Picture 1 (cartoon, rainbow, N blue to C red):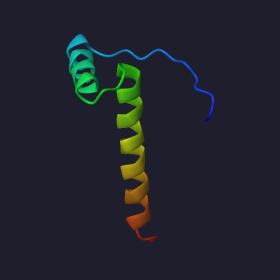
Picture 2 (cartoon, one colour; picture 1 turned 60 degrees about the vertical axis):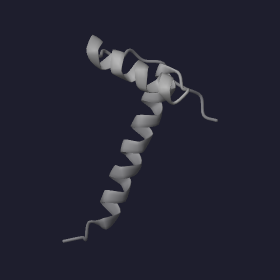
Picture 3 (cartoon, rainbow, N blue to C red; picture 1 turned 120 degrees about the vertical axis):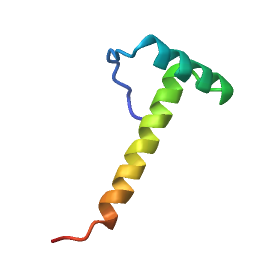
Picture 4 (cartoon, helix red, strand yellow; picture 1 turned 180 degrees about the vertical axis):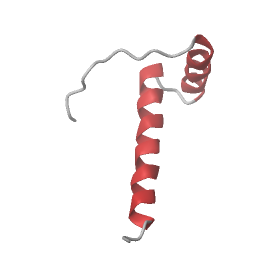
Length: 55
């Protein structure tokens, strides 16, 4: 596994509360949930780029 790089993330309190609850529902840490959601978004973006035809 690649080394993880720490950084500060500013999130409004209501969003953080929702992420924490979601993480708890899926048996993940808050950090793990954020990483999971970001990875899903990256995967969707990559798939979208593959579907685009060159002009």
